[in-house]
Length: 488
Image (cartoon, rainbow, N blue to C red; front, side, top):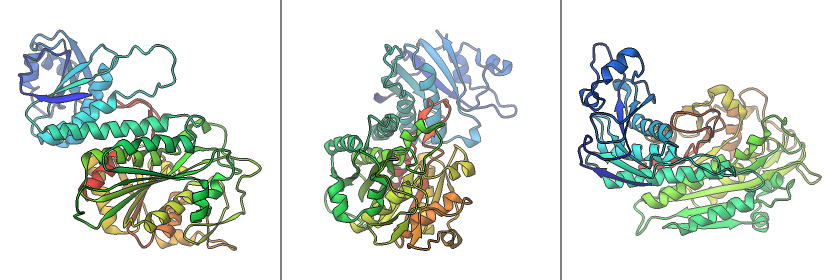
């Protein structure tokens, strides 16, 4: 997408469509007089009749508006003025993009929300519009006639860098969404590794892929135990970013993403209903790979390494069994009580590896438990951390990125539920508090390094379309990780 600022008057812009953000009216507040003029005096009537109210992401399209040169005027609600933010601008642009997709619009001009930072809005609007144009229809063979927006005009005088950054982040998030949308037969671990290798072309990125023999030499028994039931070989994907010149900090951020390209549950097989969705069990891995793509463009001044342990979890005569014991890279032994709790096993080895190669701040992302969906639904990811300051850092990054987290408990009592009679730790606890006991298991392999775990099982896939995004993969985590790296 091409995006740039224009100082031309909105009234004189000859563009295919003009999007105007509008607030919900509060009390005796009058409709925006400028936009009212654009509509030829219709705006007050639209508010009064209820055809348009300004509620967040509401849209109303006016053809051949009287007061502007644009062929179409799109009114987009942003909600209450008191709660408006850069997130509102991102959602507004996304809602506009979804409303106009397939309507023969290739060029869109967008007016800014009054009273907010121009640069932040420019980045958010570029992100929102670019994200809105993604459609998960890769394998539909019918001719695709839906037109997409390829040119964005931002009305105002803002930073070109902000817009470029927004497009870079959105492109990275769409890259992650494309990976998650791939079916399991077309994206096994070896193909995911090949897709990751394309990041080697990005500036300041190096990609390494460790195959089965290398994993055996390292001693990654937990990862190999999960992989042994599949004919598809495992991979460990490492993507390294190093800033140019002398480092200004000794911080080394490790981003660890679960990369189970398909999860049947193994011998503890899942019910057949909705098992097709288990192609998205690598959404955490996709998010950290997408984040690295954007980080290469935005160039933070710290070292960042992404690590994606990738396997397929399948039942076979070679598959890991309940009751097996594996030895992790850390040397700790794990009793396998349920082979469907496989994500924490591959993450355990990856977290240990991250520390061995020098990462001194860790965050992992994983579609880890159904329990987090029960707790938080589809709106927020669960945040678990072993360090209060690091937890606050993650929360601040999430707020800046517009991705919602909710802090979850990780008390010692949850670790106490993990007891094995024959090994150091079992891979599951009791039925209750499953998201916290899963995090407690991971904490065993992260301490003492400051670490956070994001359980994204409820947010990695949109169960229904939203105004700014279609049903399907969300790419959750990409914006958060980029914001985190830039803040650090």
